[in-house]
Every structure is written in structure tokens, then in C-alpha cells.
Image (cartoon, rainbow, N blue to C red):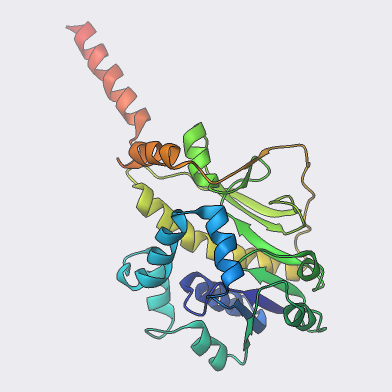
Length: 277
């Protein structure tokens, strides 16, 4: 079972965890493709799609990541890999090639993926995937989407689910030319726990997504699961949440989620006690 991982940078802790989890599932990583971070077209594409939110993501994911040691993903890495390990070090230790490409659609990336050894391409971030790469391996390109498909396609699915009062979740699917419309391999509801803040929730989701992606990849490669097509007409596509809506959602989730069932039972108990007097 051989795979290639697509990563946003060699400093991505999520990609590093995915690679190590895949290895522990018995999957050999032949190569890790990383697009050039300072490519002008890539930066412009991200800016058009995410605006000022891009600055926040760069700060939290790359510049400030080492300050968040308490996050579950960071704790897992600390417990399972040497300190300050990067994808470059991991690749050197496990005979995987780190390949720098202009983007995931360039000819070099597609030629590498067409090598017979690559059974599956696993996306762990790094930009748009074009048609050539989608067809470049035996089983296609796998992605873990941070929303339940087909209901929540597109951007900010967890925030939109919170806005709509729905439970968020994760979906592992094979990517196609559409926006999160590819065949579904597995999905999992992942509600916010009682007393859990939004920051703690998103940190927990990050580790769960890495584990879910690696587990699903192993099942697909072993032939234990077959991707199921989505109904194209089902669900809807969401876009980047407007800053005013995002601020309202953040206001809602700033307070840890309460156990409303327990609160209701307490109210009923007080009413019964009052009626008995």
C-alpha cells in the first residue's frame, strides 16, 4: 500500500501527524508534495477566497503554532515523535521524497503521481487540485472535509452548522472536479461537548480529522470500503462566512456549551418541589 501526501508546507503539524498515522496503518509514503509557499499566484488565490482570514490562518498555523502545545494534535506529536520534528525530518527517516512544486497542478506533480507505485493521493492541505492530479493515481485523491456531506459543502462548514443549529462533523471523500461533491468514504458527527469552548472544539477536531483520514485511507487501500457517490442535487454549497456573521457565531460560542437537558431537569425538579409544598 503506497501513497503520496499533499501538504501545505514542511512545517505543517497536521500533515506530519497524518504521515505518521498512515505509517502506523501500514501505508508506505513514497513522496510528499509541497507547493512553493511564496508563489504569487497561490497567495492571490488564497487572498481572493479568504481575505483577512488568511492573515489569521498564517499567524495561527505557521507563526504561532509552537505556542499552542496544549492542543490535542500538538500533544499527540509530542508523545509520538521527536521534539521539533518536521516533515523534512520525517521524510528523511522513512525514505519518502519531499518534492517542491509550483502548485499541485503542474506537470512535475502529475508525472510523479502517475508512477505505478502510487495507489492513493492524500490531501492534507496546500491549495486547489486540478483535474490532471485527480486522475493521477489508482484510487484518486482523498480529503477529509470539516463538514457533513452533502449537507455542508464548501467553506467554513463547522461555522455554518453552528449558525444553522446543526451538529457539525467530518467527511472523508474522494475529490472530484466539483466543490466537495466527490464519492463519500466515511462520515462522522462530531458535536461540541458539554462545557467545551469553540477553541477547544476546533483543536479537538484537528486531531480527530488526522486520525479519521489515516483510518479511512487504510480501509480504502485494503478494499474494506467502497466510495459512495453523492446526490449532486442534495445539500448546498457554502462560501466564506461574512465577518459580521462570523462575529455573531463567535459571540454565541464564546461561552462553553451548556448541558441544557440538565438545566431543564433542574427546573422541573424545583417546580415539583414547589408544588409539593
